[in-house]
Length: 124
Image 1 (cartoon, rainbow, N blue to C red):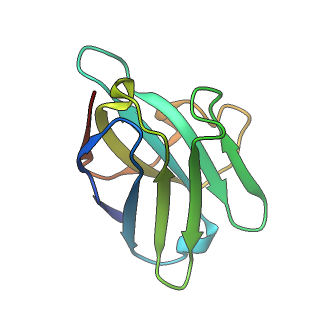
Image 2 (image 1 turned 180 degrees about the vertical axis):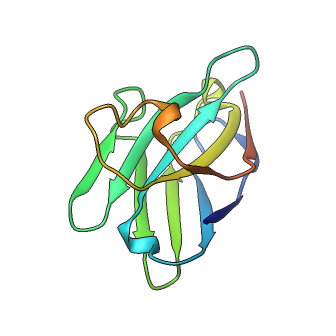
């Protein structure tokens, strides 16, 4: 069992940066693929990226170049660094963990554990 807790959300202005954190409890954190998603009001949950230790990181085209995912396995934490934020980035941001790799890494159904989400609001 893995429990995930996001933090770091808040209200920022367009152009600002923000770093979200996701702290995980449980064993074998380094073996999990750690992903980030977001969900805006009235929209489906959107894949942002996923990172695997010793393998690499994949990003959605919508955030590539602006968002960076990193992880610190010693702290059981994964981060989402968001730069040049836009009002369209306003959403609830979720981290998620998965045990197995597949080519459909963007599908939320394939993630085993989810955090409760943290709100990010970007004002214009």
